Image 1 (cartoon, rainbow, N blue to C red):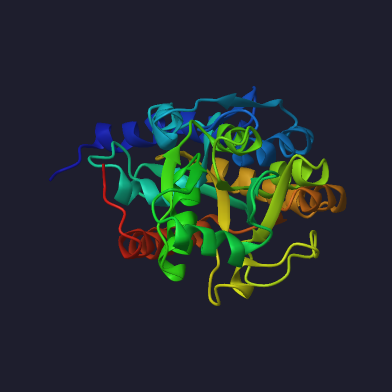
Image 2 (cartoon, helix red, strand yellow):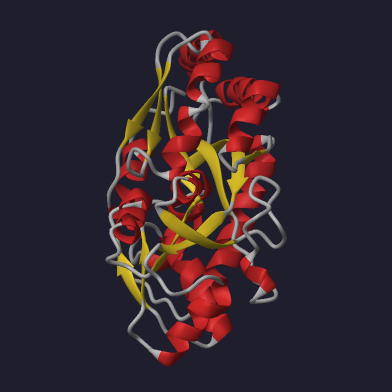
Length: 319
């Protein structure tokens, strides 16, 4: 192909406005789309980050909750947004990894369709049951399920909680009935009301209800004792090798300028290193961790592979 003299001069001119805009970023409000309901574990994490991010970036950062379709609705809203750094998505275990296997004809690719901005945090789940449950620990819950195959129920508000419960079923050789909910808060509400026998709920919401005496905690999904709740034994004490960690990161539409990605990643790392932020997130059960965009992208790809394998192992089928 021959490039004319005029075209050679025109190409840099076309790129100049984008370059200048990237250098000036951010000049207005930034929107972080949470593809799950208000009060969900993802929402709780981001709500504790928007204020320090706003201070660090010098612009207001807001949350836009777009629940629906197991995280597909909100994620698609960001995929279709302009790649200018003003619209971001939270990618979690569900919409960032498991959907690639569980959702047939998924209309987005977490790797190809997004520019990875940075990692946020990891967190465990709590296994809780109603106060009326006769189960006082994980072993007793599994024994009940063994005596009543297919009768006990567990609610789940997202794919990762479903995977975690089905993994527990498989490792214990029991069969409990899965009952889907709109989100994590709704799944917990069903247990609070005594309509469902158990759920894996996010640490912050679950522990608050446990300490108020509204539900009973049987176990935590960390491989060992979780320092923020040492009184709650790990599920692995009953099922050796059991572990489930949920994670969260931020992404923008593919094609977001590299200077914008770099500027945001730098600001995010500073926020995650702040002592007050780490303390506040720690109280909620989050372990914050900064990553470079390339590290976050590689981590995401690894998680897609491993979680797809796990979903197949526990017998989940795409729908």
